[in-house]
Structure formats: structure tokens, C-alpha cells
Image 1 (tube, rainbow, N blue to C red):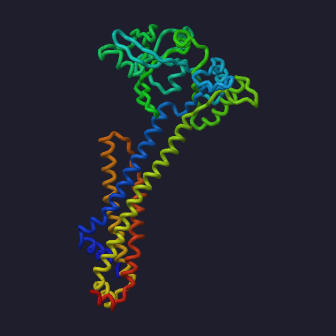
Image 2: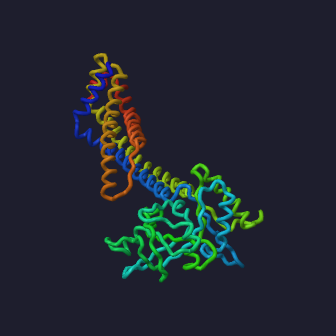
Image 3: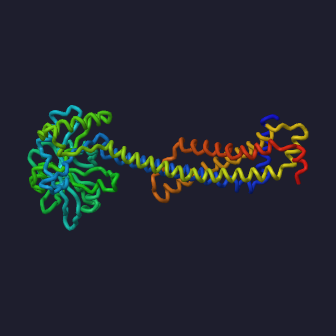
Length: 406
């Protein structure tokens, strides 16, 4: 039999029972829509996390003090005083894989302007700090080498600080604010960055020269961290090894001694979150795939019913010269037609559901062509797999027995 005729007969058989066909496809529709929506949410979350980590500086490498054991008493990282300014100079002079290096010091407190006040954090760095941390200047200027050398009381403020201290008609540039009762002149406003990966507001911040923060606020000689930027993303691992070697030399650590510092990179964060995201994607995809299998069982069930209802028709076609392979092909095509049609509707429903989630719940979603092809191919396989046995049973019917069927 011509394949086009087989397809026409299969389409006519599906159209003959539209309601039953639709109900049969419902499991496939729900399954494919679930796969598309869940993968879109998972991919969207993964992309959002990577974007937020990248916004903090993909080449960023942090050197932090390690917790120490003194006399059997464990000291936290914040109490450790192992990082000092000479480490910054040593790294800058001996690490050719680092593009920028800055000390980082900081404190928290209340900032005041007029009658307004706001609790926030102040961080100190050198003139390379904003570049390493990917802070852009929206208005005004950054602090200069002269500001750092003179421990000048100048600051850059984030958008959250601006919103809570200044009225809309007041330009922050040139104004004097007080942090812990110490006056600072605002010389720049940072561009908005939003929340980071951990939900922290990156705009709720004040930046100042590290010398100013160390002399006038913390009055400490040790650093909270050393922030660096590798020359490029591909050299992050090599730069990390170089930092470790140089820090051990700077601290004159013996081979038998452990590092008194820790090194963390953004690439490690991306890798960690990427692994978690992949696990979630596999989990969500597996759950949705179960719906597709259930839909396939529904197709097999309906195909069995169809074979039973059309036994006399099958017997008649076999009696007038029809071949078993044509019967097999017809019922198999009916099963695939149900599955593929359900898959197409499911893809449309999945895209609509993903867009609805994004618009109503503001969740990041990312619909990829891979997820559409994967779900579509899987539902086609479901149609062939679960339609094969009923089709085989129909093709194997004896014409005489089939014609006697009531």
C-alpha cells in the first residue's frame, strides 16, 4: 500500500474519535509542557546565577585570611590578622598573571545626611578596587592615588544609600555625609548592580580609600581580604597557583606549614552552582518524563481498544489482499500521530506556561531549542514504543478469525 494512503487512513481514524483522541493525547501534552516549562525554569535560574556571579567579576580572585588554631582555641576568619599591606605589594611585584591588586578593609555602621540615616557598610580599597569589583561610576569620579596617599575623607556611594539619604531634588555629588560621626565628601555615585548570587544588595555600599578606612574608622593594620583580577578568564587557575606560591613566600611559610590564607575564585562559585543546577535539571526533567511515560501507556491502552473495535475491518482488509505490514504501519502511524500531535500542542503549552511564570512570578526562564527537540523526540519515541505492540497484534490477526469477531 502507498505510504500516503496509510497516512490518510491513520489521520481519518484519529479524526473519527476526536474527543477520545484528545483525551489520549492529554498525557503527552501535559508531559511535554512540563518538560519544556521545568527545563526553561532550570536553565533560566542557571543563567541568572551565572550572570550575577559574572557581574561581581568573572576574573576576580579573593585572598582571605584562614581561620587559625591558637592554643587549642579556633579563631574565626574575621579575627585572623594574617593579611597585611606588604602582601599586596608582594603580589603586585611578583605576579605577572594578575591585572590588578587591591587591599580590602571594611566596617559597618550608620551613615547620616541631614535628618536621614541608614545602616550600611563601608569598604576601603585602592584606585583599582572599583575595576576589580566591576563597579561603574554613574556620576562624579572615583578616588585617585592622591586621595589614597593622603587618606582623604572622600567616598563613593551606592544607589541604595543615595535613595535612603537624599531627596530626589538633591545631587549627592559634593555633599558631606557622616559615617560613624566622621564627615566624608561624596565624590561619586556608583551605577546600580542589584543583588548578588547570595541575595545581598550590592548597591547598599560606601567605598573609600583603604588608607582612610584603616586610619579613621577601623584603626587596624591588617586586611579583611586582598582582591585581585587575573589578566583573563583562561589564566584564572594559573594565577591562583601563582598567588598561593607568592603568598607562601611573603609569609615565609615552611613546606610543612599549612596556608594561613584561603583563595577563592568566581569560577569555583560558578562550578558549584552549575553542579547544583544540573542536578536540579535532571531531577525536574525526570519528574516530567514520568508524565510522558504515563501518556505513552494511555496511547497503548487506546490503541488496544482501537484494534479490538476494528477487528472485523482488519479482517476484511486482510481478506481482500491487504498485507500484515500495511496493517502494522497503519496502527503504528496512528500511535505516532497521536503522540507527535500531542507533542506539538505540549511544546506550545510549555512555552506559554514558561512565559506566564516569567511574567507573573518574575522568575527567570530560558527556553532552549535543545529542550524543545529533546521533549519532541522523546514523545515520538513514546508513540513508536507504546504503539508497536498493539500494531503488531493487529497485523498478526488471522483474517477468518477477524471476520468472525463480534
